[in-house]
Length: 334
Image: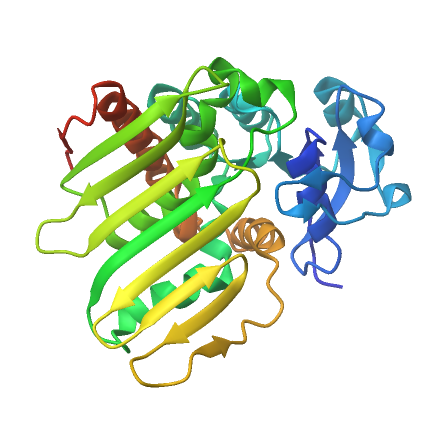
C-alpha cells in the first residue's frame, strides 16, 4: 500500500471540522488525531460555518486530545500538523510544530502581521520542515478556471477582475476582537486579495476605503489594486451583511467568467449564458492532499509558497493603512 502522511488537526472549531470532513478518500494523507482544548468540540461530528454545514466526520476513526503536548507525545508516527487555531496563535504553534519535527499546513491568514510571517519562514528554513498556508482559493476549481483562462488567453486579454466576499459577523468571540482575528480585512477579504496577487503579482499601488465596526477593525471595505498597463482590479469585503455571498467576475475581451456562490458561468455577447461543469470540488481537501504529496516527494509547495502568502498579509497591512488614512494611495515595492 502506498505510504500516506499521518496528520493531526490542531483546533477543532468550524474550519477544523471543515478540514476534517475532507480527509476521507485523500490519497496522500491520513487523519489520525484531533486536538482541541474544549472537550465538547471533540464530540461534535459537524459544525456550522459561513458556507453552511462543515460536513460530518467519523469521530471513532481518530484519536482525540485536549492539549498539543499530550497529542505529540502520544503520536510518535505523526508527520504533519494541520493548524486550525485562532489567527493570533498561528505563528506560535506553526513555529512550535516545525521545531518539534512536523511539517505544517496552517489556516489563513498566515499570521496577524508580516513580521510573524517572516518568523515562520525562518523557522521552516532552519528546521527543513515544509510550511504551507491554506489559501483555499488557489485550490478552488472556479478560481482555477479563471486562472487558466488568464494564462491561455482563450477569451482574450483580461480587462477587469472584480471580487466580492461578504457576510455577517462570525459567532465565535475571538473573531470579534481585531487583536485576535485581524477583523474582516485580514480574515475574510484576504481570500480575494490572495487570489489577485497569485494571478497577477503585486500591484504597483493600492487604494482602500473602509469603516471600523464590531471587531474594532475595518470590517467593511473596498479596495482598488492598480496595475500599470494591466487590468482594473477591485475587491470588496465585509462582516456587515445579512448573509454570506461571494462572487468573482473576470471580464476578458471576448467573454466574462463569473464564479458566484460555487457556480461558474460564461457570458458572451449575443450567445446563451453557459454554466460550466466544475465536477466535484473539495478545495479544503485538495490543499491538504497537495502539501502531503509535496512531503512525500520532498518538493516545495509551489502553488502556495509561504513567501507568497506572506506578501498577501503585507498587502493587507498596506490596505489597512490606506483605509485608516481615508483612502491614501500607497505605492508598493515588488
